[in-house]
Length: 479
Image 1: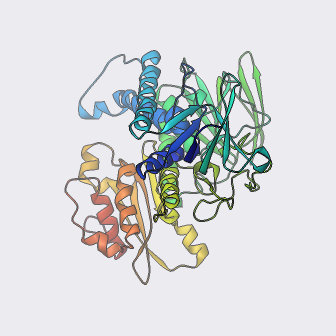
Image 2: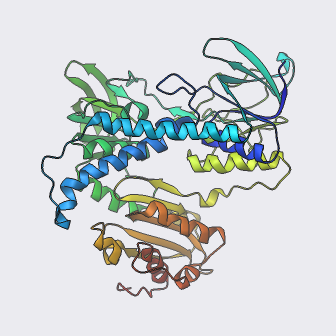
């Protein structure tokens, strides 16, 4: 038996590495087990987020935005560029360099915090294997070793959901990872699912010249977002050339010589479509395959997620679970906070996660962001509310940037004026939402936000004016 740790974390993604670093900061002897390998076959900490998710997708979104701006936005500024081209080798290579920088950065943080890192697949063992809170590590070479800890944090993350009739082959039918490494701009790209991944990666290849068709089985566009915000976003995506078909349920995907042949049904019956490549982005599922021995006592719910209480404890002494593998939204920053909170609970401190104010962001153009309740949710819950909204078209900075699309919508309690939700679509809203989250965390009211001085000219003035609009006193629009 190897030496014993205070904490062993299975999974080096956002939730796992935050848990490990915080535990080490608190003086706990910590180890992390992670099996992710980079393109070079070597250990690559950071999980889906750093390797094939948040970071690389944003790199490609930014690069593709630069190219798109040349033809669509620069002429307005009096700037003309002839015969602009994309070198996909450099385009993808820049993304890979950024990924390596950040995964290597996590490795350096581990070393700085004296965290021991094991490269391999971790499995929580049960009492039949010689004692609870033991972790078996299987290396890529098949060799096994067993570690013991007082506490084990399960942070195994999630994987893309695969459709039985559209299985990933890595070439023609791809997942989010495959969509980050396409070596030639396809003439046509089909996307199954108009969620975050489908919209972001669909936008990347649409900007580079692919004809992108998105099939969404649900009848409403972005049903989790506020309806007013989703409506604006859908209109803008259509202008950009994204063909989003709602209520379109994929029935079959056949790979043939001339492309992927799709059969789907909508309100008009059975339809067909042929695309060069198909991205399946219908969501993700908790990744718990091989994570648990049969006798650990850790339970899974009907969706395969690890069952935990409000403190991310599994009910088994010393065993915790965080991130995508447990209930709640599959967001990296949600995992960050859970990981750090668990480390603090283990150390006897007051960890905390407020699930009511977790911000959501979709990094398209325009960006979409929100926190708190939607108008639909409040109606269903019978909560009295009032609304203030303000368009970016009336914000000087947005007009000067030629990005005057979208609006900020603020919802406050009709009686207490407490901010219940803020929903945005427009330029830079991924950053603007943070101010609103802070206000909501401090139980702020629309009046509070309205009385805070915002610099002029800035995009943040849209938040200020939306707060003013809640009481029908916005300055730069009719109320």
